Each structure stands twice: as C-alpha cells, then as structure tokens.
Length: 142
Length: 142
Image 1 (cartoon, rainbow over the protein chains, first blue to last red):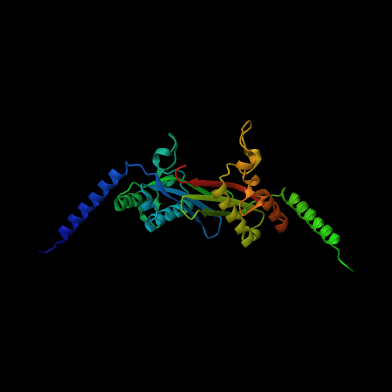
Image 2: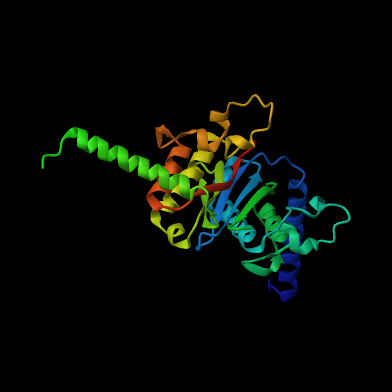
C-alpha cells in the first residue's frame, strides 16, 4: 500500500484532534499532585517560583514534567506575568491579557506557541490534567 | 608579654561590642542592592524564594552573601515563617512571634542562634546593612 502525503496529513489531523480531545477531557479532572520549581537568573537579581499541578505523583516525577516546571519559572522571571489566566484580570482593567497572563504569553523558548499551548500539548501527551496553580516573582528593587 | 585567658576574653568582648556597634550603625543605612535566592526541597514539593538586600553589589556577589541567601530560602522552606519581623504580626494576633517570624526563628543549620542573630553577625562582618526584604513559600496542596 502506498502512503500518500494526504494520508499522512489526515493521520496527523486525527492524532491532533485525539490529543486535544484527551486534553479537554483531562482538563476537567482534579490536579492535586505536582511540583514546585524555581529559577534564579544568572545575575542573581531576578527569581521565580512556580507550582505546577498534575494528577499523579508518577507524572510529577518525570523529567518532562520537571522541565516544564523549570521552563515556566524561567518564563515568569523573564516575561513578568501578573496572572496565570485571563479570568484573573480585574474587570475594567486596561491591561493587555497577552502581556500579563502567563498562559497567553508567547513561550520564551519557542515564541511561535503560547505557554497555554505548551501546557495543552503536555496534557495530551501525558493524558493528565496539568495546571499552573500559582507563581511568585521577585526582582531586586522592584 | 604573657597573654592571659582574661586578656583574650577582654579582647573577644571588645571585638563583639565593636561588631555589634558596627551592626547597629549599618542597620540604619539604605540597603538597595542584593540578591534573589531560591531553594526547592529534594522531593520537589516545597520551594521558597527570598530577596536579601545589602548596600553594595560588591557584597551581594560574595559567596558568603549568596550562602546566607540560600540558607534563608532553605529556612523558609523548612520552618514556614509567615512574616519577616515581629512588627508585621497583626495587632491582637495570638501567634507566637518566635514561631511565625523568620528573624526570631531558631536558625535550622545552628538552632542555638536565631536567624536575626545570623544576620546581625553578617552585618558586623561585612560592615554593610543587610535586610531580608521578602520571601515566598509554596508547598504542594497547601
């Protein structure tokens, strides 16, 4: 049987939809496990702390999950979000959601995707609900 | 000239008073430099971020200053203080200051001294004002 480009594209589309369906389903489940990760910029003047939740300690202990936690702490240090999600922005605020919400910011390691998209893909890959619960950011003198 | 134990004791007392006098003087000066340090417990479930201020970037870059910052982040992770100083405890609160204030807690690496005493000694040694400006502590599921 000859595999055409069209077939590959169809299969990719199927997998993508399957992944997103998994992510949507997982997104409703409880995420009570997870990790706390920290990042301090090499000059020692900016640091961030992130709590990233998932459903099982099994996933929490994987290198991939830890890397996402570390990347998010680096994102917070570099891009100074003020909120995790858009829902947290005070009503009537004139803040630009894409600037101040972690999940809407372009992912610093790959600016073609948002942080939210990176997390949705991790949900699809692990099959577990993954949530950024909170973050904290300190910058010297601010 | 024979040095007696009494002389050594006197000299030690003099140096101690000199150090504390230096510390008291330094304690009134502006501390606008410093570092941000982080600590994450090896199980990945507890993390802390600390901003430690001093007067010059020269002192901020020393290994001793960085070690104090790291030790304080570890202290915050392990001993869960809620405030830096006693002054921050709300009036009429029934909290035990020695339990909830970072500076009044026994230093986990050397419980015979308080965290505040460790910092006062660092002030005397460096000749600079040193202050814990703020900290943040995340514990999974709390």
